[in-house]
Length: 189
Image (cartoon, rainbow, N blue to C red; front, side, top):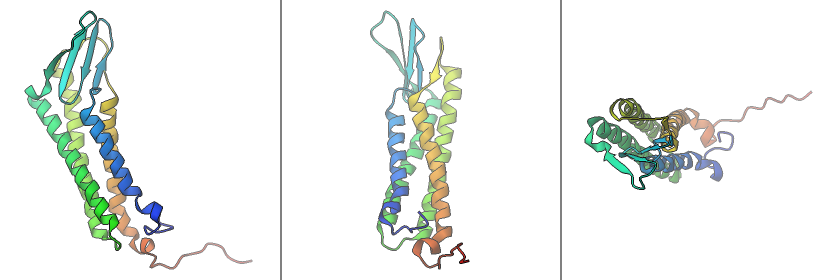
């Protein structure tokens, strides 16, 4: 990316594209019912960020309780949701920043800082949820944190990684804009 500069059309949109993927993963985590799952018969358990559902082998209906009735459930949902909203704002700002012909590198560094703030909120929600869930909710059999919880952690890891990229990109401003004479390591014999 630095070799061709951000004016190279395919490389220019890599960071906003990665932010878009993180937004999609976060949406999957928010909507998914696979934060915690158990398939130990005769007991089945599924939980999302919003509710916890159980059923026994013979019962066709799930019995669900809202996690919003618990203070920790509201705290976990609120912190992860705030992190997700900040991520969506960063995505919109990145689209604006990279659509402008002359890049504003301080603006890009600000997006990186916001991504770190989003990551802090997401980590808080992702730590509160399993610690309090396993202490407060009656679990039987073998339970595991599943695919939607994994998508939430993937979103958080992407926020941290992209935060580094957005913060470090202005350090290479001259190389990106083509203001530096290229250095060749080849010497003629």
